[in-house]
Image (spheres, rainbow, N blue to C red):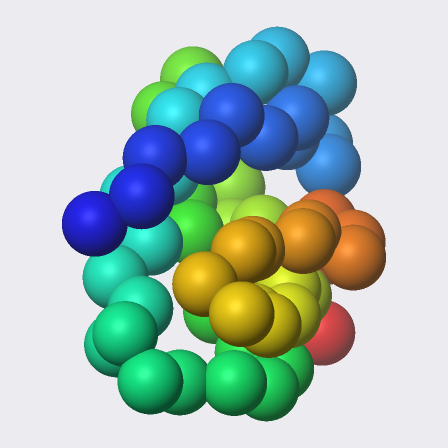
Length: 63
């Protein structure tokens, strides 16, 4: 499990999300995380390559 700090799309506060990635997984993932401060849904798009996680965007999770 890897923890990443993201900024909420709605209230711009930072909160931590826990990402569980298989050791052999490579590719793109989209997941919804509710903000710990304002409770709005944030869509987190990220990619995994060679065990590293790169967050591409945090957008409106209501879409």
